[in-house]
Image (cartoon, rainbow, N blue to C red; front, top):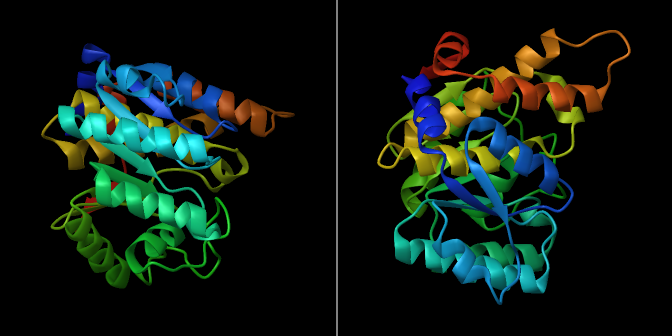
Amino acid sequence: MLGECIENLRRRCPLVHNITNVVAINDVANVVLACGARPIMSDEPCDIQEITSICDGLNINIGMLKKYTAESMLLAGKKQKELGRPRVLDPVGVGASSFRKETVFNLIREVGFTAIRGNISEIKTLSMGTGNTTGVDADLADQITEENLDQIIPFIKAFSGKVGAVIAVTGSIDLVCNKEVCYVIRNGRAEMGKITGTGCMLSGMLASYLAANPGNELEAAAAAVCTMGLAGEIAWSRMQEGDGNASYRTKIIDAIYNMDGETLNKGANYELR
């Protein structure tokens, strides 16, 4: 069950390297700590391979992409691939510019990833080479709904088989797929979209779960996504009059910190397709 994945994470405490969005870097570090792993942040090309070589997992996020960070991502990704350790890609706003597209397609080609996490617009861009993505939010025409699940799930499974990665698509309904099985996850709150960086935080958690559960990538990814969504539900239930999105962010991190296998198993809301 999914709860075993978080218990493995708490016990193994993997060291996770994050080359991530500076807008959310502090929250990513805190969430990685909260879920049971240890974060390290470095994006300097001169030391990136040494840093990566001591880490159990790698999280690459292109949210604030620069030329030197693109170089660092490639170097770190190749080192992790050489070492056979999990690599996560978060292609934030990949369709917004040719620089982002070229960087991400090169990373997928040269590095390969254990898991890719994005919204449906970003995943469509990666799969088809074009898309409507203009930023970190999904285009309004690209939403996962109960009505279009039967069309979207085969598309995501096919993309997973094409790139050889677990694909985590987050939105009002979350999908975590390999080429054969899809977790359809209905945890979370719409209000989580009012907090900057929840997706970035999830990608750090995803790398942490994968690092602690080698050989069980699909279930580990599903556990990470369920943990974040369930934490959003728990945190919302603890909101008080006068609380806003800053309080909500803190309560989400607290809920992740206090999550255990039993809580996750009881609260995870998913089906397999």
